[in-house]
Image (cartoon, rainbow, N blue to C red; front, side, top):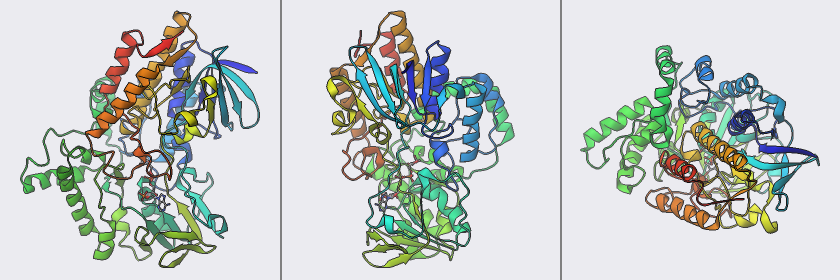
Length: 528
Ligand code: NA7
């Protein structure tokens, strides 16, 4: 049986950097990856229009100054193929592939308390052991396939946006149905509508979307950032969510309507996620939020010509409570003759039929069904592995009422196991790559500390864990996130999933907490 200092599960951005960092510190490291290539999220999500909603110059690694200088992004928001090229470039440049085992799914991890090591098993029946496990399994990687009656009876092709085929999908001349109107659907729909003969969109909840105004990379701006990358990164690391979103210090309720609208107009013209930072209370005050809702709904009514369709597209929820979408011509697409919008909240989907789909009102036919139904977010990929900690307790049992851990990184009862960008950390509510690098660096420092002190195990204490979960919830309770909508942040998109707000709201305060723990000699952890 192979034995490693560190086993990493996943070769996405977290797994790649963890491998590079820990290997460079002298640990023996091995990565297990289900896919046949690197890239994680950007390896699987290949649907038409897939693109990052964070600026290219920010959504990239900063651990290597040379890498930052040599890589060039072609657009303001990078398309999926380019991000995947980048992941491959990183894998080659830092010679990572030799320690990555592709086409290998880890199915079980068992903690051997006597040895203080993890025993792992892969789907092909092979076993390995490792002193430490780094779970780099991704926050949005376990796709959600709703249990529609009759799905297996569908005579045509079923595709999921999060597991899009690697071969070319030709939708020319096809009659396509798509279920879901979240970020993935909103990116895909305009392109699907161009390709397909007919496209029927089944919408349960309308989403807010802000135009990306994507464009070719401004070379002058790129040059400026490249010349100042360390300062640019340092500044961003002190900003909320580690993003350059130009946060306003003003309440939406402080201004007269005309002045407020002018600010929304300017943010709409700039496009993208910074819209959320138009005012300082959109995430915490319902009345303030309503002003943003009204602005976006007025835009939808302006763009979409048919008033009835426009009304259906106008979200009735809190803006930003679900992940804000960023699009290119999403609302405009509903002006096309070949696109139909069906509201499946009023008349829910009853079943999938051989020819299409039946709602409580009507039958629809199509030959390709696209599920843009999202993910079992944040915990899905971790719980898909049979992880057994001390005393035979599984992570599934431990998390039956929702994820509990310390710093979003370590779980009491599961020593030497780290969840990169885990629930309870900023992850999906921060610039993900920045959050990943911070987690990996923190873990690397801890493993170095253990080795220097001849200690073999580290485990979060039950008290630290309880207090952390209370803190995560306490912070969230001051915002509209927990109660404003049924989001995947609270597990509400998966029937039966415990409802608990999962991300830690507050980068960079989170980093300060992690650093303080390192500086103080790891209070809240038992090192032995
Ligand atoms: P999302 O944002 O979770 O969207 C999933 C969509 O699928 C959403 O519109 C759901 O409607 C819809 N859905 C899910 N299950 C059903 C059923 N059973 N019937 C009808 N409609 C359904 O996933 P995405 O992949 O778009 O985006 C995930 C993240 O990736 C995104 O937040 C970005 O961070 C990138 P609902 O809203 O639940 O009514």
